Length: 200
Image 1 (cartoon, rainbow, N blue to C red):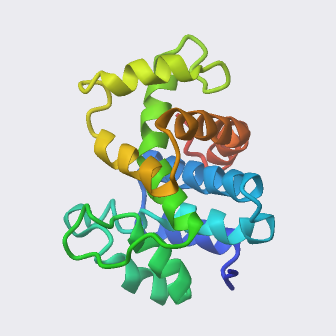
Image 2: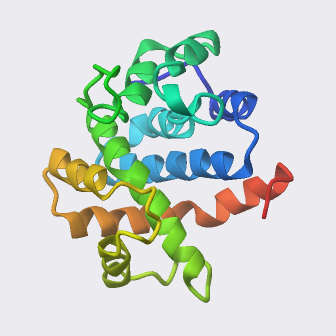
C-alpha cells in the first residue's frame, strides 16, 4: 500500500488540527514506531505508508475527543488522504468506540491498534527514569508499570492485551518490540519537536 501524501503533508495535516505539543509528539512517535515495525516485519517498501498512518492516527482527538475516529475521515479526506489511510486510522478505534466498523485487517492496522496505547505507557514510564529515555528501559520494568493500574491510568491495558492477541503475539514480545521501536525514533522525534519550537 502506498499514499500520495508525503511525510511533510501528514505532519502539516496533524498540526492543522493539533496544537498541544504532547499530541504532536505522540503522532510523530507512533509514526516512527510504525515505520520501524514495517521494516522489521518485512514491509519495508510500505514503511512510508505505515509511518503516515501512525502520524495521522489521532488527527481528530484534540479538537473532537468525544467523537474520536468519527470526525477523522472528513479531516483526512479534505487533506487528500486515500481510503486506505482513512480505514487504517479509524481501525485503531475498533471495539473502543461504537461508531467504528473499520476492523484492523492489514498487519499495519493490527500493529497500530496494539502499539498506540503501549507507546503512551512506555513514554510515561520513560519519563520516570533517571535517563528520561527508552534507551535503557527493560521489559521487566515495563511489566511492573503495566500491572500497576494507577500508573498512566489513561493507557488501556485491555486494548494493549487485545492488540497483542490480534497479532498472535505474547504480551512481552509486543512490549519488547515496541520499546525497540521507540528507541529507534526517540532522538529524531525529539530533534523534530525542537525544530518546530515544541520541545519541552
